[in-house]
Length: 438
Ligand SMILES: [Zn+2]
Image 1 (cartoon, rainbow, N blue to C red):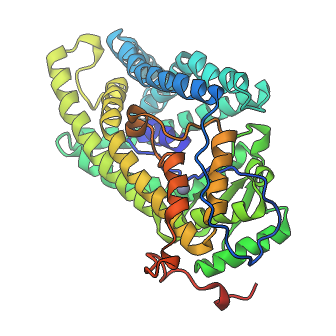
Image 2 (cartoon, rainbow, N blue to C red):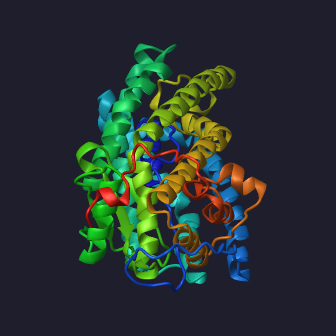
């Protein structure tokens, strides 16, 4: 989500979650290296959530709603109070030239928003995570991560925000289209560079320490048609007890990242199924597809921001000190409108994300045929991450980027086309075990 906020501040673009694909399983007590024994077909029951997990989930929904409301209130307050216009005037005095005015305005605006968001951000990211026993992060690490993250957003925003504003000046009727077109190379650049320029500022990424397991993973990757794949282990145990893995990067920076917490809590067979899921994202091209969907969402959002923004400014007749969208002081207005668009379009992005996650689960099962290990990994995921297996409708619509854990366990318990004489959906990408020497 860091990427999303970066993109948003950067050029006022709206994008759905771009960090394609996390899994976050956890598991049982079965241990040891994968061995070619007959697979256990006993279904894994979906566990009841603990009382603590239910409380975490329900309060999390309220906090999410508060966060969304806050993301409307802050820009509204800065716009309607005239503060935004005053920042612009100050930026103009300091910067003189237009391009510096835009950059200084963005830095000032980012600082104020950071300070206004700080109490909620501190509670959500630090106090609450410790209260529920999920966090291992020191206050210093939390503070330095937060400052770095905000600093990067502000600097990138200051460097790039003049571009959409120049386009608005030059083409007031079609800027939303041209800006969307420019977001595509921009997002490709962000996805390409973030794993090597930004992520290492927050955690240590290195090769996998368990070389035996790494060889198993590389053999699996070879069966999935991925050659020369890069697997990174990241020391998330300094931040959290939660488990996760994800695929990120493009071209030369494409990689699968495993949190060390996941490696510590899952046994090898479970890790292999998780890797199968991540490889599914990789092989099925989910990162570039997500960028494509982001662009469509950006197009719709900017079109809406243009129409609604011009209508509102015409009505306001220069009150609040802003009369044109091309004035950098209209940033909070655009952010407000983009936040509304995000609330409307998030359900669409989630439907697509859930589809990708489900297909990655299918790919993992077809590749490993380790249904029981996959289900047990999801059981661990639920327990360690304080998840609930079957969240309610509102959660699923606005927050459900993945199928629920209950649905995923059910799928693992039943999806065995290879035993029912049915063809596999991804057989063309998967080489049989006998074709690869371990
Ligand atoms: Zn995934």
